[in-house]
Length: 486
Ligand code: TXE
Image (cartoon, rainbow, N blue to C red; front, side, top):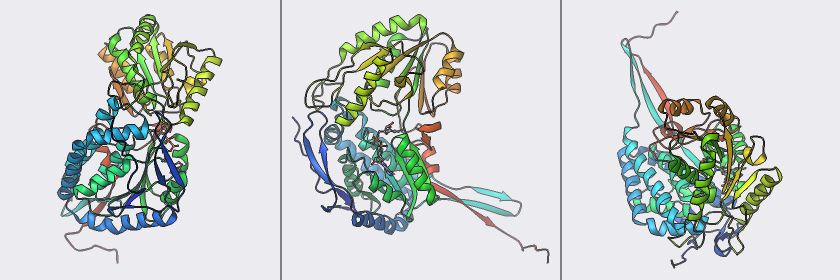
């Protein structure tokens, strides 16, 4: 059993050190597998928020004056430290979220380290351009935005903290990051490691709290940019608040993504893709392909094979490396998911597997599969954010593309087929920011990640992220006299 060192030294990490202010509201940190309180942090008071923003502002000019190679060097060092501590960070991620260690040990701190490494390497290649205009010329400078605010959701606390920190810092910005109040522990480790790697005090700060603390950060005049990972309703509030100060935004919001399986698909891979796209992290992944459209010819075989594969679920203590299916993050999330399952039954969908809450102190819900789901059912239109998979069937390519796109979301989409032309036609036709052909839910930092329509604005990872953490200044240089009409 791991040492349950989960109580952090203090709630916040500001100006290179831990800071506590117990005048803030106490936030109990609950271990989703047992319901026990494993730590207590305190919501940031106005004094703590002020201290974080003031330090971030004070540190930004000096940090931007480092050469990009120097900034990249400390990000690389931070990635190295993170990989060395992957085990401890994964155990903490499991305590924070309830996700099985089998997942966290390969998907969370490793992805965070990848981002630090990738943007550490990209930093020195962030340059402007030279535009010759006869004898005159223009050069451009790609400059940092200033103080950035990051706000995280509860499903990938380490990864989200690093996916925002890495490009922001590589570009010479500073950041105040607020993790979700439901999973406050991991971001503090990211801050500690960045500081240990040599990032100067004040460059990356973490403060705790709920939406009210988030709202205070978003509306502060010192903030140039806000990057949110969260639900669409929250995205609307944050986007509107950021507009007040005409701030740059990145919105990584929710989804109700389609996976389309044609008759000629590789059945085993399609089932694996659907399992990854619905049951990884107990279904609490924004890009999940929760509407699974199966062509009628393969539907029976698909359902048989999926039902068979679900027997491989090993639900239990997520700290046990043999366990591959954990609890939902909170009692509230469990109740939201079970309400949707009840709704699905009421609407007449056929419950093929699961559907039950697992008795005990943890927030466990069985992996659940509905078939005979119709497009207008609530479970086919709303984001459930839990292990609930909806199987819909279809006849033709044209029909399924129209139905797959018939949603206000646009985060991700996947297709399984052996027909190369059809795969790329579907990818081109999907109204989504992140598409998959014959796989699902892989998120390498080299690839852009983000949504269209209600699922968001902007992209995380890949070179695209540099556009969202810098601004271009054009400098016109006249080589001759200035001509004027009088
Ligand atoms: O989101 P919430 P949760 C989405 C996922 C799901 C949701 C679950 O699809 O919809 O996130 O995460 C803060 N001003 N994604 O429940 O409630 C709040 O404190 C400023 C998409 O955490 O929206 C928390 O830190 N901040 C994603 C954060 O917003 C406010 C991947 C999110 O809270 C605020 C993962 C306010 N007014 C989950 N109100 C993707 N697309 O990558 C709340 N917050």
